[in-house]
Length: 288
Image (tube, rainbow, N blue to C red; front, side, top):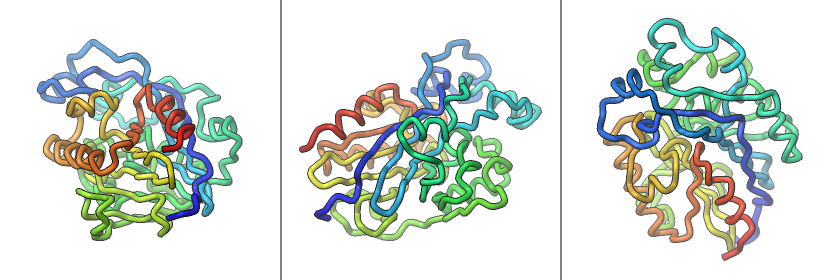
């Protein structure tokens, strides 16, 4: 990899969300207990999606939350499941926060998006897919299996918002790799075959969660991690989020720490980290 096919990496936010502190950092209390009883909420957190201008087309990593989440009273399921969804997070999404409006702020049109990668299929990551019927939508096969499985709604996956007529889903499986620069990961998926955009399996938050390693010649690599963590400082301290499969999250977090040893300058970019935008700005302004 010599020439740099990546011309620009940007971040946009489709509004904000407040969640319970136990969601960001597990305190050991059972998830259902704090969901039902906690009265504390975080400060507003961004709903980030990342935009990569690549020679082979405009790429999104995640698509943010659909504004219908705050305008449509029937957006969430009914009954107890819907009650739990409303306890998970409270969203603020203004008209100017839609995916199309935020892309326009960066100088792009939604029609330019060639590929959208979904870290996972929770609504605040897959909420923009309705606007991307012309694009290739990339998701892991493991995540899709969870979406169409019998327990999908119980883990926050709403098939009626994702499995829509006219969308072009590319359900990927990860291939074995012996690339030492990806250690300790032994499976990966090279999106364009040029080594610049590599998907890594990072299950835990959901069964098929994945992250994107962005490598640019002469610059710090970027790792977009979805909801693996909600704040890079919590990751630094090896704290796990309060929602997800604890054992898988621990395994994945350990792998990320090992990957950071392989790439000491690795820039971690979570979806809801308030510091991610500034971290990305510094990383894209400075060559190493």
